[in-house]
Length: 196
Image 1 (cartoon, one colour):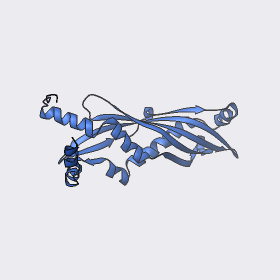
Image 2: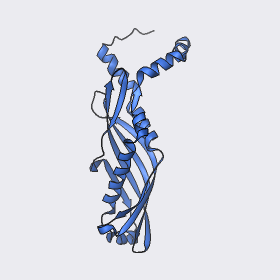
Image 3: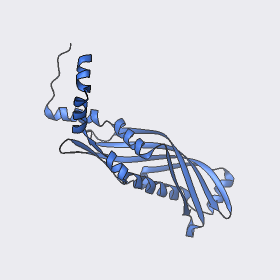
Image 4: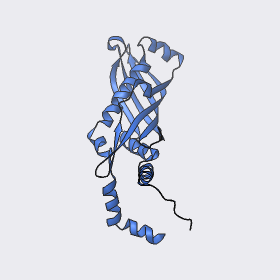
């Protein structure tokens, strides 16, 4: 057996945070919150609301990565295949897009032993949309205006509402102390020690 490597209390706390709330685990919470699909509309778009748009999207993947070195900041990236339909001048045009969203997250450590996940409001640069527009569709959409920007704005509002919901409030608080108590009381800790 290799000798133990000593950790200071601060070092132990930092390693505990990295293990308990790793970027991939925070991303899993965001994935649970967002779900497999996003949807909004129909909503008015274009000058004076001359058209309406509706979008449905299927989440491809969600990935977390650390931002900074102290383990308290995480960026969660979500990639979504989006199907968009725009109704204008009595006809409906449909097209596909690839959406990339980034949620910027800060982890707060609070008493007695909780990790609180704070998700910042999304900025314009946190959402990108890559449109696949056949020529006829592109010409039709020129009459509507900047559909790209309006879809991104409605998506931003949709996600911001999700992360401010009551369900999100419950998911955003990891009660580490309670989880440790449950692990002991259920026998998981002793079972694990015996297996070693």
